[in-house]
Each structure stands twice: as C-alpha cells, then as structure tokens.
Length: 113
Length: 112
Image (cartoon, rainbow over all chains, first blue to last red; front, top):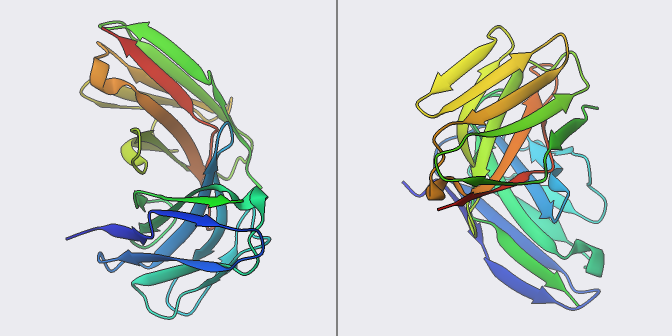
C-alpha cells in the first residue's frame, strides 16, 4: 500500500517549457487535490477533483491545468512554465469529503529558470 | 472564501517545555479544523483534528482547543521532545465547500 505517489520528485524547466506532474493514489479515494507550497505562504490549493472526470479551480489556478481521467490518478499540467511557478507541489487525497484526513504525497520540487 | 491566520511563524522551546500555536479563521461555516505536521522533505501528515461540536480534544501529549465564538483554535504540545521539531499547519474547512484552507505554518524547534 503506497498511499499517494508523485512523479517526478525533482524537475528543472526553462521558461516556456511544458510538463506534467503525476499523482497516483491506491486508497480508492474520491477527492484529490494539488497544492503548491512557497516559503511563508503555507499550502495554497491549485485545483481539486471530487471524483473521476471532475475538476475544479482552487485559490491559485492560473497557469495550470488538471485532468482526472481515472479515479486513482490526478495530473497537473503546466503548458508554458514561468519562474513564478517555481515551487514545491503536493498532491493529496481524501476518502469522501473535505472534512476528513488528507493524505499527502512527498512533494515534487519544480524549478523554472 | 475562508482566511486562516497562524501565529507564531517560528517557535523555539526547550525540551520538556510546552508549545502553543494559534490560528484564527473567518468563515463561521467552517466546522472541521485539522492540524498537520510536516517534517523536512516530507509531505504534511495529520496529527490531530477537531470538529465544531467539540471544544477540546487530546491525544497523549497533543491537544487542540476550539473557540467557535471567537473563531480561533490552538494546538498545544506538552513535554516537547526533539522529534517534535517540524513545521505545523492549521487548516479549516466546511462541508458546504470543497476546500481546505491552510495557515502559513509554524516552524517549531525543540532545543535538547
């Protein structure tokens, strides 16, 4: 039982490049989230999904897209990376609602030059 | 949306002393308040949570208190140990929304 797995763990991009972060969970959770963590700013929600085939915007969605084609996977895409997207990205999942425990992955550190 | 403020941003205590971290929230509809601990290089992990129908909850050396009228909640760690050193985040959410709102974190250092 791996929990929440994020790939890749580290990535360096040049401005304008694109990439996709993959999140996979093996707990059959309905809810999945993508957060970014920046110094002094805590965890800010980018996008989330309440079930397979659904996505919704969080606090800071601009410059990102997401897809939830399979219940266990939640993909975060950057179409044209910018230095402001340099951050640590965390995926999380929860069983059924937003008033239960969040299970986080170990994070993906992205640097945009 | 909800606004969660957390204080202090850094906290140093001597081993064996107590540590208190405080959070306030703005949305009266919030009814679930978890606390997460993040160790270096890891994702946050839930350590304790409280729901709005309860004023206090304890789990060994950790306790959380909630004051719904004042819209604040606090994490109390007693008999601190070096392994308590980490970043702690408070959060708030409601079952009418779909989001958790996190505080900005408190970096706790326990000095042996």
